[in-house]
Amino acid sequence: MAKFSTTVPGSRAPASASFAGKSRTRRVTQRAACCELRATRYAPAKYSNPIGVHALVWTGGWEKKDIELAVKGSKDAGFDLIEVPMLEPETVDPKLTKSVLEEYGLQSTSSLGLTFATDISSEDSGVVRAGKDFLFAALEGTAGFGGTHLAGVTYCAMDKYRGPISAQSWKNCANTLKELAAKAEDLGVILGLEVVNRYETNILNTAAQAMDMIADVNKSNVVVHLDTYHMNIEENSFEQAITTCGDRLGYVHVGDSHRGYMGTGQVNWQAFFRAIAASGYDGPITFESFSSKVVSTSMSNALCIWRNLWEDSEHLAKHARNFIDTELTAAKTLEQAGTR
Image (cartoon, rainbow, N blue to C red; front, side):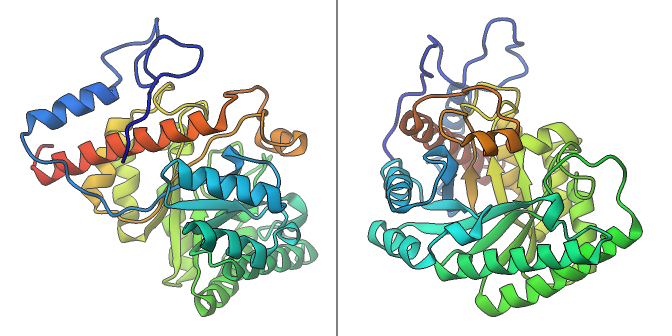
C-alpha cells in the first residue's frame, strides 16, 4: 500500500518516535522495525488479516451522510473493513448501510456495549430480557448489512461495577450468550466477547476469563475479542494473552494507551505484533480511536473521552493504516525468517 507521513500534527517527531522524557530503550519505532526487517534479508511477508477501522474515527452518527463519509473515508485510507457501532440498533438502516458498503467494496463488522438497563449479567430477570432483546436486534441489524462479526462488550454493562460478579450473574450471562450465539450461527455471524479493563466490567478483564466464558457458552462461533488498550492495563503480556486464546481469538482492536495516534503512547507495538504473527491469527485487526471532536457528548461521557486527542480523521486513519501495515509486515517477515 502507499506510504503515508507518520508525522503527527503539532509534533516534530514521527508518530512512532519516543517523546522527550520517555525511555527510548523501552519503545521500538517503525524505523527500528524496518531496520530489523531489512537485516533479515528476506522479502517482506504478506499477511491475510483484514485491516479495519471503527466508524467513530469518522463520525458520531449513522445517517446517510455519515455512512457515506465513514465508508468512503475508510476505503480511501486503504482499509478493508469498517466497524459499525450498534449502540442504538434502531438508528442503523441495514439496507442503506449494505448498499453503501457494496458501492465501495468494503467489508463490515459491528460492535456494541450494553448498559445497566440491558445488562444480561443482571440478577433481575426483566433487565436480562431487555438485554436479550437489544442483542438480538443488534444481531439482526449486523446480519442485515452483511457484517461478519458482532463484537464488543456483548455480555454486561460497559460501566463501572461496585463489586465482583456473582455466580448467578455469570450463569445469566452465559445462558443468554448461548441463545444469542445459536441465532448468530443461523445468520452466519461470529459473536465476539471483548475483554476490557476493570473499570468497564467486572466479568471479562483477561483473556483467561474470556476463555472460561467461552467454555461455558460452548458454541463454536463465539470468540475472544482482544483490545490492546485494555490488554495494556490488565494482561501480564501480549504474548501470554494471545497464546491463552489459541484458535479462539477471533477479533482484535488496536489502539494506543491514550486512544490517540498509534505509536505515541505506551503500548509496545513490536511485542504485540510479534505475538500476533507467532500465533498465526489471520482474523480482523481493527483500529479504534476516539476524540470528542467527532464523538457526541453523550457517547464521550460514556467512553470517558474528556479531551480532543486528534482533530483530523483522515490523517489519523491513514497514519494508523500505514502504521499497522509496517508493524504487521515486519512481524510476519521476522516470524517467517525464524527470528524470535
